[in-house]
Length: 435
Image (cartoon, rainbow, N blue to C red; front, side, top):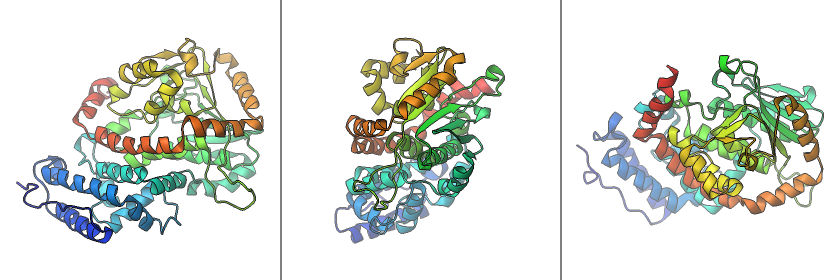
Protein backbone atom coordinates (compact mmCIF):
# COMPACT_ATOMS: atom_id res chain seq x y z
CA UNK A 1 0.00 0.00 0.00
CA UNK A 2 1.26 3.46 -0.93
CA UNK A 3 1.13 6.03 1.88
CA UNK A 4 1.80 9.71 2.17
CA UNK A 5 5.02 8.84 4.01
CA UNK A 6 6.29 6.81 1.06
CA UNK A 7 6.25 9.83 -1.25
CA UNK A 8 6.12 13.00 0.88
CA UNK A 9 4.40 16.02 -0.66
CA UNK A 10 6.67 19.06 -0.91
CA UNK A 11 6.19 22.07 1.31
CA UNK A 12 5.41 25.19 -0.69
CA UNK A 13 5.80 28.86 0.04
CA UNK A 14 8.83 29.83 -1.94
CA UNK A 15 9.25 31.44 -5.32
CA UNK A 16 6.75 30.57 -8.03
CA UNK A 17 9.24 28.73 -10.30
CA UNK A 18 10.42 26.55 -7.40
CA UNK A 19 6.89 25.73 -6.23
CA UNK A 20 5.82 25.05 -9.81
CA UNK A 21 8.66 22.58 -10.33
CA UNK A 22 8.06 20.85 -6.99
CA UNK A 23 4.31 20.62 -7.54
CA UNK A 24 4.66 19.26 -11.07
CA UNK A 25 7.19 16.65 -9.96
CA UNK A 26 5.01 15.38 -7.13
CA UNK A 27 1.77 15.32 -9.11
CA UNK A 28 3.48 13.47 -11.94
CA UNK A 29 4.60 10.81 -9.47
CA UNK A 30 1.05 10.51 -8.13
CA UNK A 31 -0.24 9.81 -11.65
CA UNK A 32 2.48 7.22 -12.20
CA UNK A 33 2.00 5.49 -8.85
CA UNK A 34 -1.68 4.65 -8.24
CA UNK A 35 -2.84 4.64 -4.64
CA UNK A 36 -4.60 1.34 -3.99
CA UNK A 37 -6.54 2.41 -0.90
CA UNK A 38 -9.42 4.00 -2.81
CA UNK A 39 -11.80 2.90 -5.58
CA UNK A 40 -10.68 2.89 -9.19
CA UNK A 41 -6.99 3.28 -8.51
CA UNK A 42 -7.26 5.17 -5.27
CA UNK A 43 -9.01 8.47 -5.96
CA UNK A 44 -9.78 8.65 -2.23
CA UNK A 45 -6.56 7.12 -0.94
CA UNK A 46 -3.98 8.92 1.21
CA UNK A 47 -1.60 9.68 -1.66
CA UNK A 48 -4.34 11.36 -3.64
CA UNK A 49 -5.47 13.25 -0.56
CA UNK A 50 -1.92 14.58 -0.20
CA UNK A 51 -1.95 15.53 -3.89
CA UNK A 52 -5.20 17.48 -3.48
CA UNK A 53 -3.81 19.30 -0.48
CA UNK A 54 -0.82 20.27 -2.62
CA UNK A 55 -3.02 21.44 -5.51
CA UNK A 56 -5.04 23.56 -3.13
CA UNK A 57 -1.92 25.05 -1.58
CA UNK A 58 -0.30 25.78 -4.94
CA UNK A 59 -3.33 27.50 -6.45
CA UNK A 60 -3.99 29.43 -3.26
CA UNK A 61 -0.41 30.73 -3.16
CA UNK A 62 0.08 31.35 -6.87
CA UNK A 63 -3.36 31.92 -8.44
CA UNK A 64 -2.50 35.35 -9.80
CA UNK A 65 0.79 34.32 -11.40
CA UNK A 66 -0.69 31.09 -12.74
CA UNK A 67 -3.69 32.87 -14.25
CA UNK A 68 -1.44 35.51 -15.81
CA UNK A 69 0.53 32.78 -17.57
CA UNK A 70 -2.64 31.07 -18.75
CA UNK A 71 -4.04 34.29 -20.22
CA UNK A 72 -0.91 35.92 -21.66
CA UNK A 73 -0.83 38.53 -18.88
CA UNK A 74 -4.63 38.99 -19.00
CA UNK A 75 -4.67 39.71 -22.73
CA UNK A 76 -6.67 36.54 -23.46
CA UNK A 77 -10.23 35.96 -22.28
CA UNK A 78 -10.44 32.20 -21.83
CA UNK A 79 -13.58 30.33 -20.83
CA UNK A 80 -13.59 27.75 -18.06
CA UNK A 81 -12.94 24.72 -20.27
CA UNK A 82 -10.17 26.51 -22.16
CA UNK A 83 -8.47 27.54 -18.91
CA UNK A 84 -8.64 24.01 -17.54
CA UNK A 85 -7.15 22.55 -20.72
CA UNK A 86 -4.33 25.11 -20.73
CA UNK A 87 -3.61 24.48 -17.03
CA UNK A 88 -3.36 20.74 -17.66
CA UNK A 89 -0.56 21.44 -20.14
CA UNK A 90 1.23 24.11 -18.11
CA UNK A 91 1.18 22.23 -14.78
CA UNK A 92 0.82 18.49 -15.48
CA UNK A 93 -1.36 16.87 -12.84
CA UNK A 94 -2.86 20.11 -11.52
CA UNK A 95 -6.16 19.43 -13.28
CA UNK A 96 -7.33 16.48 -15.36
CA UNK A 97 -6.57 16.38 -19.07
CA UNK A 98 -9.33 16.41 -21.68
CA UNK A 99 -8.75 12.70 -22.21
CA UNK A 100 -9.11 11.94 -18.51
CA UNK A 101 -12.33 13.92 -18.31
CA UNK A 102 -13.73 12.16 -21.38
CA UNK A 103 -12.95 8.82 -19.74
CA UNK A 104 -14.77 9.98 -16.60
CA UNK A 105 -17.82 11.07 -18.57
CA UNK A 106 -18.24 7.53 -19.91
CA UNK A 107 -18.69 6.23 -16.36
CA UNK A 108 -21.87 6.45 -14.28
CA UNK A 109 -21.61 8.83 -11.35
CA UNK A 110 -21.13 6.01 -8.85
CA UNK A 111 -18.03 4.72 -10.66
CA UNK A 112 -16.16 7.97 -11.30
CA UNK A 113 -12.69 8.56 -9.92
CA UNK A 114 -13.60 12.06 -8.85
CA UNK A 115 -11.13 13.87 -11.07
CA UNK A 116 -13.49 16.85 -11.29
CA UNK A 117 -12.64 17.58 -7.66
CA UNK A 118 -9.34 18.91 -9.01
CA UNK A 119 -11.30 21.26 -11.27
CA UNK A 120 -13.13 22.50 -8.19
CA UNK A 121 -9.85 23.14 -6.37
CA UNK A 122 -8.45 24.96 -9.40
CA UNK A 123 -11.41 27.29 -9.93
CA UNK A 124 -11.81 27.89 -6.21
CA UNK A 125 -8.29 29.31 -6.17
CA UNK A 126 -8.73 31.41 -9.31
CA UNK A 127 -12.06 32.88 -8.27
CA UNK A 128 -10.76 33.77 -4.80
CA UNK A 129 -7.87 35.72 -6.32
CA UNK A 130 -8.98 39.31 -6.93
CA UNK A 131 -7.41 40.09 -10.31
CA UNK A 132 -7.70 36.58 -11.72
CA UNK A 133 -11.23 36.06 -10.43
CA UNK A 134 -12.56 39.33 -11.82
CA UNK A 135 -10.93 38.72 -15.18
CA UNK A 136 -12.34 35.18 -15.33
CA UNK A 137 -15.84 36.41 -14.56
CA UNK A 138 -15.53 38.99 -17.31
CA UNK A 139 -14.30 36.32 -19.73
CA UNK A 140 -17.37 34.21 -18.97
CA UNK A 141 -19.66 37.17 -19.69
CA UNK A 142 -18.26 37.68 -23.18
CA UNK A 143 -20.32 36.39 -26.13
CA UNK A 144 -19.60 32.74 -26.87
CA UNK A 145 -18.19 31.62 -30.24
CA UNK A 146 -21.43 29.83 -31.14
CA UNK A 147 -23.36 33.05 -30.50
CA UNK A 148 -21.08 35.16 -32.66
CA UNK A 149 -21.35 32.62 -35.48
CA UNK A 150 -25.17 32.70 -35.32
CA UNK A 151 -25.55 36.46 -34.88
CA UNK A 152 -25.69 37.55 -38.54
CA UNK A 153 -28.34 34.98 -39.35
CA UNK A 154 -30.37 35.92 -36.29
CA UNK A 155 -30.24 39.61 -37.09
CA UNK A 156 -31.41 38.88 -40.63
CA UNK A 157 -34.24 36.46 -39.81
CA UNK A 158 -35.12 37.23 -36.20
CA UNK A 159 -35.00 33.55 -35.31
CA UNK A 160 -32.43 30.99 -34.23
CA UNK A 161 -33.20 27.30 -33.71
CA UNK A 162 -30.74 25.85 -31.19
CA UNK A 163 -32.33 22.42 -30.95
CA UNK A 164 -33.53 22.19 -27.35
CA UNK A 165 -33.96 25.96 -27.17
CA UNK A 166 -34.83 28.68 -29.63
CA UNK A 167 -34.93 32.45 -29.71
CA UNK A 168 -37.26 34.66 -31.71
CA UNK A 169 -37.51 38.42 -32.08
CA UNK A 170 -41.07 39.72 -31.82
CA UNK A 171 -41.06 43.48 -32.19
CA UNK A 172 -38.62 44.72 -29.59
CA UNK A 173 -38.87 41.53 -27.48
CA UNK A 174 -36.49 38.58 -27.73
CA UNK A 175 -38.30 35.44 -26.62
CA UNK A 176 -36.18 32.47 -25.53
CA UNK A 177 -38.16 29.22 -25.58
CA UNK A 178 -36.84 26.19 -23.69
CA UNK A 179 -37.84 22.94 -25.41
CA UNK A 180 -36.02 20.01 -23.82
CA UNK A 181 -39.31 18.14 -24.02
CA UNK A 182 -37.93 14.67 -23.34
CA UNK A 183 -36.93 15.77 -19.85
CA UNK A 184 -39.62 18.40 -19.05
CA UNK A 185 -37.08 21.15 -19.69
CA UNK A 186 -34.64 19.80 -17.13
CA UNK A 187 -31.16 21.30 -17.56
CA UNK A 188 -28.01 19.47 -18.61
CA UNK A 189 -24.74 20.42 -20.29
CA UNK A 190 -26.37 20.72 -23.71
CA UNK A 191 -29.26 22.90 -22.54
CA UNK A 192 -26.93 25.20 -20.59
CA UNK A 193 -24.88 25.76 -23.75
CA UNK A 194 -28.01 26.39 -25.84
CA UNK A 195 -29.44 28.85 -23.31
CA UNK A 196 -26.21 30.81 -23.17
CA UNK A 197 -26.26 31.19 -26.95
CA UNK A 198 -29.90 32.27 -26.86
CA UNK A 199 -29.25 34.83 -24.12
CA UNK A 200 -26.23 36.16 -26.04
CA UNK A 201 -28.33 36.67 -29.17
CA UNK A 202 -31.01 38.59 -27.29
CA UNK A 203 -28.38 40.85 -25.76
CA UNK A 204 -26.44 41.36 -29.00
CA UNK A 205 -29.41 42.24 -31.22
CA UNK A 206 -29.84 46.04 -31.22
CA UNK A 207 -33.51 45.78 -32.14
CA UNK A 208 -34.35 43.87 -28.96
CA UNK A 209 -35.02 45.85 -25.78
CA UNK A 210 -36.41 43.14 -23.45
CA UNK A 211 -35.75 39.41 -23.10
CA UNK A 212 -38.39 36.82 -22.19
CA UNK A 213 -37.77 33.21 -21.18
CA UNK A 214 -40.56 30.64 -21.30
CA UNK A 215 -40.97 26.89 -21.59
CA UNK A 216 -42.45 25.26 -24.69
CA UNK A 217 -45.59 23.07 -24.68
CA UNK A 218 -44.63 19.56 -23.61
CA UNK A 219 -45.21 16.17 -25.22
CA UNK A 220 -44.95 14.16 -21.97
CA UNK A 221 -48.26 12.30 -21.39
CA UNK A 222 -48.84 13.95 -18.00
CA UNK A 223 -48.26 17.44 -19.37
CA UNK A 224 -49.11 17.07 -23.08
CA UNK A 225 -49.86 20.43 -24.65
CA UNK A 226 -49.04 22.39 -21.48
CA UNK A 227 -46.11 24.70 -21.18
CA UNK A 228 -43.58 23.88 -18.45
CA UNK A 229 -40.92 26.31 -17.25
CA UNK A 230 -38.45 23.71 -15.99
CA UNK A 231 -37.90 20.56 -13.94
CA UNK A 232 -34.46 21.44 -12.54
CA UNK A 233 -31.30 19.47 -13.15
CA UNK A 234 -31.54 16.46 -15.44
CA UNK A 235 -31.27 13.77 -12.75
CA UNK A 236 -31.11 10.96 -15.29
CA UNK A 237 -28.00 12.44 -16.87
CA UNK A 238 -26.53 13.19 -13.44
CA UNK A 239 -26.98 9.55 -12.43
CA UNK A 240 -25.35 8.43 -15.67
CA UNK A 241 -22.35 10.70 -15.02
CA UNK A 242 -23.17 13.07 -17.88
CA UNK A 243 -23.39 16.32 -15.88
CA UNK A 244 -20.12 18.27 -15.72
CA UNK A 245 -18.82 20.46 -12.92
CA UNK A 246 -17.20 22.82 -15.45
CA UNK A 247 -19.65 22.76 -18.38
CA UNK A 248 -22.79 22.61 -16.26
CA UNK A 249 -22.51 23.77 -12.66
CA UNK A 250 -19.88 26.48 -13.12
CA UNK A 251 -20.59 27.51 -16.72
CA UNK A 252 -24.28 27.86 -15.87
CA UNK A 253 -23.71 30.31 -13.00
CA UNK A 254 -20.89 32.26 -14.66
CA UNK A 255 -22.46 32.08 -18.11
CA UNK A 256 -26.09 32.57 -19.07
CA UNK A 257 -27.42 33.27 -15.57
CA UNK A 258 -24.85 35.97 -14.88
CA UNK A 259 -25.44 37.39 -18.35
CA UNK A 260 -29.17 37.72 -17.64
CA UNK A 261 -28.32 39.41 -14.34
CA UNK A 262 -25.38 41.64 -15.36
CA UNK A 263 -25.38 41.67 -19.15
CA UNK A 264 -22.68 40.94 -21.70
CA UNK A 265 -19.11 42.08 -21.31
CA UNK A 266 -17.94 43.42 -24.67
CA UNK A 267 -14.68 45.07 -25.79
CA UNK A 268 -14.52 48.84 -25.47
CA UNK A 269 -15.06 50.28 -28.96
CA UNK A 270 -14.29 53.85 -27.88
CA UNK A 271 -17.79 55.16 -28.65
CA UNK A 272 -18.86 55.72 -25.03
CA UNK A 273 -17.03 57.81 -22.45
CA UNK A 274 -18.17 55.29 -19.78
CA UNK A 275 -18.16 51.85 -21.44
CA UNK A 276 -20.11 49.13 -19.71
CA UNK A 277 -21.93 45.86 -20.17
CA UNK A 278 -24.72 45.35 -22.70
CA UNK A 279 -27.72 44.93 -20.42
CA UNK A 280 -31.41 44.35 -21.03
CA UNK A 281 -34.30 43.64 -18.65
CA UNK A 282 -35.71 40.12 -18.55
CA UNK A 283 -39.11 38.54 -17.92
CA UNK A 284 -39.58 34.92 -16.83
CA UNK A 285 -42.90 33.30 -17.75
CA UNK A 286 -43.52 30.34 -15.43
CA UNK A 287 -46.13 27.89 -16.63
CA UNK A 288 -46.94 24.84 -14.46
CA UNK A 289 -43.83 24.70 -12.27
CA UNK A 290 -40.27 25.82 -11.71
CA UNK A 291 -38.36 23.10 -9.88
CA UNK A 292 -34.76 23.21 -8.66
CA UNK A 293 -32.57 25.07 -11.12
CA UNK A 294 -35.62 26.52 -12.86
CA UNK A 295 -36.64 28.12 -9.55
CA UNK A 296 -33.07 29.31 -8.93
CA UNK A 297 -32.86 31.34 -12.10
CA UNK A 298 -36.05 33.26 -11.31
CA UNK A 299 -34.00 35.14 -8.71
CA UNK A 300 -32.11 37.04 -11.44
CA UNK A 301 -35.11 38.05 -13.58
CA UNK A 302 -36.56 41.54 -13.39
CA UNK A 303 -40.14 40.36 -13.54
CA UNK A 304 -41.66 36.91 -13.02
CA UNK A 305 -45.16 36.09 -14.30
CA UNK A 306 -46.64 32.72 -13.32
CA UNK A 307 -49.85 30.83 -13.94
CA UNK A 308 -52.01 30.79 -10.82
CA UNK A 309 -51.60 27.00 -10.51
CA UNK A 310 -47.79 27.10 -10.81
CA UNK A 311 -45.47 26.25 -7.95
CA UNK A 312 -41.78 26.48 -7.02
CA UNK A 313 -39.55 23.97 -5.21
CA UNK A 314 -35.83 23.53 -4.47
CA UNK A 315 -35.27 19.79 -3.85
CA UNK A 316 -31.49 20.16 -3.58
CA UNK A 317 -31.07 18.11 -0.41
CA UNK A 318 -33.04 15.20 -1.87
CA UNK A 319 -30.72 15.35 -4.87
CA UNK A 320 -27.61 15.74 -2.71
CA UNK A 321 -26.30 18.95 -4.32
CA UNK A 322 -26.08 22.70 -3.69
CA UNK A 323 -28.81 24.65 -5.52
CA UNK A 324 -26.60 26.98 -7.55
CA UNK A 325 -26.55 30.54 -6.22
CA UNK A 326 -29.91 30.15 -4.49
CA UNK A 327 -28.12 29.97 -1.12
CA UNK A 328 -26.81 33.47 -1.82
CA UNK A 329 -29.91 35.03 -3.40
CA UNK A 330 -32.96 33.37 -1.88
CA UNK A 331 -32.48 34.74 1.67
CA UNK A 332 -32.31 38.24 0.20
CA UNK A 333 -35.47 37.74 -1.86
CA UNK A 334 -37.63 35.62 0.45
CA UNK A 335 -36.04 35.93 3.90
CA UNK A 336 -33.90 33.52 5.89
CA UNK A 337 -36.69 31.31 7.24
CA UNK A 338 -38.41 30.67 3.92
CA UNK A 339 -35.02 30.18 2.25
CA UNK A 340 -34.05 27.50 4.76
CA UNK A 341 -37.44 25.81 4.52
CA UNK A 342 -37.07 25.72 0.73
CA UNK A 343 -33.45 24.49 0.66
CA UNK A 344 -33.47 22.14 3.66
CA UNK A 345 -37.09 20.91 3.62
CA UNK A 346 -38.05 21.12 -0.09
CA UNK A 347 -41.02 23.31 0.80
CA UNK A 348 -43.46 23.75 -2.04
CA UNK A 349 -44.39 27.39 -2.66
CA UNK A 350 -47.53 28.02 -4.69
CA UNK A 351 -47.38 31.02 -6.98
CA UNK A 352 -50.79 32.28 -5.83
CA UNK A 353 -49.88 32.13 -2.11
CA UNK A 354 -48.50 35.07 -0.09
CA UNK A 355 -45.10 33.34 -0.04
CA UNK A 356 -45.34 32.81 -3.78
CA UNK A 357 -45.60 36.56 -4.30
CA UNK A 358 -42.05 36.80 -2.93
CA UNK A 359 -40.88 34.74 -5.92
CA UNK A 360 -43.20 36.03 -8.65
CA UNK A 361 -44.76 39.40 -9.41
CA UNK A 362 -48.07 38.14 -10.76
CA UNK A 363 -50.01 34.88 -10.71
CA UNK A 364 -52.64 34.87 -13.46
CA UNK A 365 -54.95 32.30 -15.08
CA UNK A 366 -53.30 30.37 -17.89
CA UNK A 367 -55.57 32.03 -20.45
CA UNK A 368 -54.16 35.44 -19.48
CA UNK A 369 -50.46 34.50 -19.50
CA UNK A 370 -49.66 35.77 -22.98
CA UNK A 371 -51.22 39.16 -22.27
CA UNK A 372 -49.53 39.42 -18.86
CA UNK A 373 -46.12 38.58 -20.28
CA UNK A 374 -46.55 41.10 -23.10
CA UNK A 375 -47.58 43.80 -20.61
CA UNK A 376 -44.57 43.06 -18.38
CA UNK A 377 -42.21 43.25 -21.35
CA UNK A 378 -43.74 46.53 -22.51
CA UNK A 379 -43.30 48.06 -19.06
CA UNK A 380 -39.66 46.98 -18.87
CA UNK A 381 -38.93 48.49 -22.29
CA UNK A 382 -38.81 51.91 -20.63
CA UNK A 383 -35.31 53.28 -21.33
CA UNK A 384 -34.75 54.13 -17.65
CA UNK A 385 -35.07 50.48 -16.58
CA UNK A 386 -31.54 49.48 -17.59
CA UNK A 387 -29.89 52.26 -15.58
CA UNK A 388 -32.00 51.40 -12.54
CA UNK A 389 -31.32 47.67 -12.71
CA UNK A 390 -27.59 48.37 -13.13
CA UNK A 391 -27.50 50.36 -9.89
CA UNK A 392 -29.74 47.86 -8.08
CA UNK A 393 -27.55 44.91 -9.01
CA UNK A 394 -24.28 46.68 -8.21
CA UNK A 395 -25.39 47.24 -4.63
CA UNK A 396 -27.73 44.36 -3.82
CA UNK A 397 -25.23 41.80 -5.09
CA UNK A 398 -21.76 43.24 -5.81
CA UNK A 399 -19.87 41.15 -8.33
CA UNK A 400 -17.13 40.40 -5.80
CA UNK A 401 -19.78 38.92 -3.48
CA UNK A 402 -20.87 36.53 -6.22
CA UNK A 403 -17.23 35.77 -7.06
CA UNK A 404 -16.42 34.71 -3.50
CA UNK A 405 -19.64 32.70 -3.30
CA UNK A 406 -18.87 30.85 -6.52
CA UNK A 407 -15.32 30.12 -5.33
CA UNK A 408 -16.74 28.28 -2.32
CA UNK A 409 -19.49 26.77 -4.48
CA UNK A 410 -16.91 25.31 -6.89
CA UNK A 411 -15.14 23.31 -4.21
CA UNK A 412 -18.21 22.35 -2.19
CA UNK A 413 -20.27 21.29 -5.21
CA UNK A 414 -17.49 19.09 -6.58
CA UNK A 415 -17.27 17.33 -3.20
CA UNK A 416 -21.03 16.80 -3.19
CA UNK A 417 -20.96 15.35 -6.70
CA UNK A 418 -18.52 12.66 -5.58
CA UNK A 419 -19.98 11.91 -2.17
CA UNK A 420 -21.40 8.39 -1.62
CA UNK A 421 -24.81 9.64 -0.52
CA UNK A 422 -25.48 11.51 -3.77
CA UNK A 423 -25.97 8.38 -5.87
CA UNK A 424 -27.92 6.76 -3.03
CA UNK A 425 -30.23 9.80 -2.97
CA UNK A 426 -30.72 9.56 -6.72
CA UNK A 427 -31.46 5.85 -6.50
CA UNK A 428 -33.96 6.35 -3.69
CA UNK A 429 -35.82 9.44 -4.87
CA UNK A 430 -35.61 9.46 -8.66
CA UNK A 431 -34.06 6.62 -10.63
CA UNK A 432 -35.99 3.72 -9.05
CA UNK A 433 -39.23 5.71 -9.41
CA UNK A 434 -38.66 6.14 -13.14
CA UNK A 435 -37.62 2.60 -14.02
